Structures are given as C-alpha cells and as structure tokens.
Image 1 (cartoon, one colour):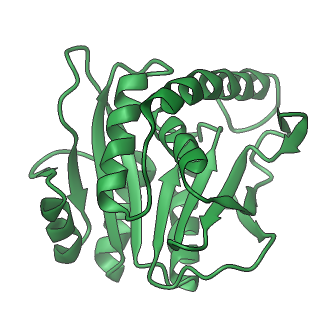
Image 2 (spheres, rainbow, N blue to C red; image 1 turned 45 degrees about the horizontal axis):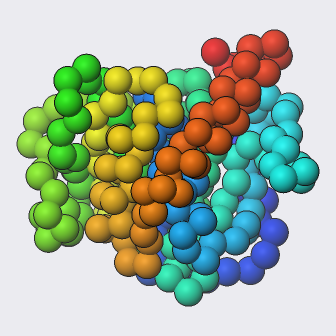
Length: 236
C-alpha cells in the first residue's frame, strides 16, 4: 500500500490563478527557512494542516502554542499559498507529497507551483538557476532574470513536480541553489528567498529577519528530526 497524506483545511480561501510554494526541506534547510521568513513579511495566515500516519506523532510548540509540523499558509490578497514543513521526508514519501500538491493545486485552480532544491557545493555560492515544466514556465524564468537549467538532474519532490507538471500542463518552476548541506545555511536561504520574490508578486525578504528565522528554524527542524529517530516511523 502507498502511504497516504491528508489535507485538512481550517478556513475558506480562494487561490484561483494563484501560487503554491513547496516548503518541504530537501538538502539542508533552505526551503523551510526561506518560506518561514516570507510568512513574517507578508499577510499570511494558517489555512490548513497536512497529516499522515507515516508522520512522527509530534507537536511543535511555538510561542506556547502547539503546531502541526506540516502546515498550509495562505495570503488571501495575493493568492499565494505555502506548504511549510519542519519534517524532512523520507524518499519513500516524495512521490506521495508531490502528487498531493499537484492534486490540491488542480482542485484550487492554482496556476503556478514554485519549488526548490539545494545542490551540494563546497565552493562559493553561485547565482541560482531554474527549470520549468512547460514553455510558459520557462519563459517566466527568463523574464525574471534567471539562468535556465539546460542539462542536469532534479531529484526528490521537485523532480516529480516537474515531470508530472510537464505531462499535465501544470506550470511548475524549480529554483536550484547551491548549499553545503548543513544548516542553517543563511546564504542559500537568502538567495532562494530573493529568487522566489522575483517570481511571485507580493512576496519579499528581509535579510535581518531571515537571519533570525534561520537560527530558529534550524533548532525546530533538528528537534523534529531528533524526536523522529526515537519513533517507529519511516523517517531517518
């Protein structure tokens, strides 16, 4: 049996023609940190949670309040949604997570899915490059000033989003940033945050805030990972 994930919406919202940002961590914590910082710069509010029997049974406490480790935030004005997760998914869950996003995007009539992946690098970080699932997505990448990936491999959830988006005419853009694979990796998070803001209207980055969020997010993610090790789950 394939693992299941469920979305539980807790309020009404309209994302017709809007955006979905994939905030699941890949290599390092760049995606989680960048999306977390965006929540504090724009008018996002909690709109739903994502649960699964394959997730570790933990609650993340922030400012004294319990939180699901994987949540959905929506900016109603700009029609931008974020899947924010402090869980690093085992590769056996990547396909399930990607298809969940694609199915939800179709249901909500979302036009654009923006994901990211960190590329391990020990040298100085380079400018990010991007790849799109369709001709329309690739044009948007060029118009935003990104270099377009011509040849290479995109692994994990972002790779599945690209493949399925290509088959089903879903506009998917994946930003690739360089990282050494360790957290909090402020520089790659900042580059990613700025890259997303070039693609999505109404999103922005505050580097001072991003630095603080990087430090807090690193602690939360590591705590979630550490607790998961002691549970009989599919997590590493």
